Amino acid sequence: MQFFEDLVVGQRQELGSFTFTAELIKAFAAEFDPQPFHLDEEAGRGSLFGGLAASGWHVGAVGMKLLVADGQRQAAEARARGETPAVWGPSPGFRELRWIKPVLAGDTIRFATAIESLRTSETRPQWGIVQARHTGTNQRDELVFSFLASAFVPRRAPAS
Image 1 (spheres, helix red, strand yellow):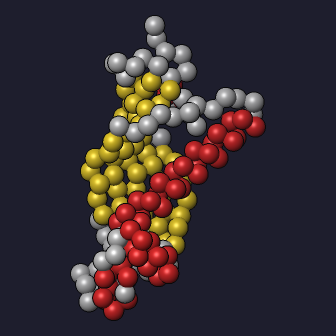
Image 2 (tube, helix red, strand yellow):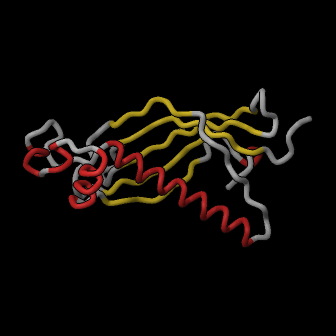
Image 3 (cartoon, helix red, strand yellow):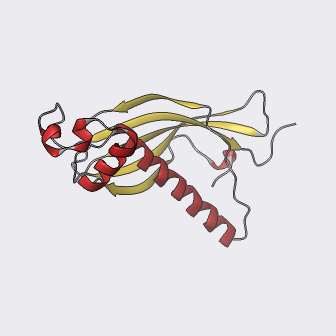
């Protein structure tokens, strides 16, 4: 993971991709979002989605899993170079959550994040705050998922 001073507005990171199979969609929905169009192909075809659709929460959870895995990869690479990786703090929240197009069984979604703004914390000088746009794009290059997240990022050398 990077320190606040290493981040740049516009910096983009590809996080990986994930294929939403019917089995995975149904398993997630049965546990967390048991609506008919997430559980049954026929109900999905008869819905506004036109097919078995992944829960938006499922799409978001997969994106989060890939984001965390990417951070763990970056931290391991930093340690392998003999560096101490930054340990990011919590997120104070997110905005603008949008499920733009349905994610249907068989769709493969590519997840990415791009930094939109950086600022130092006024009350915690050892931290910066990053805002990043997290997105998911399907195999047809259509944006299907987006939100703007904030996170606390440690500063390498906070001002006194």
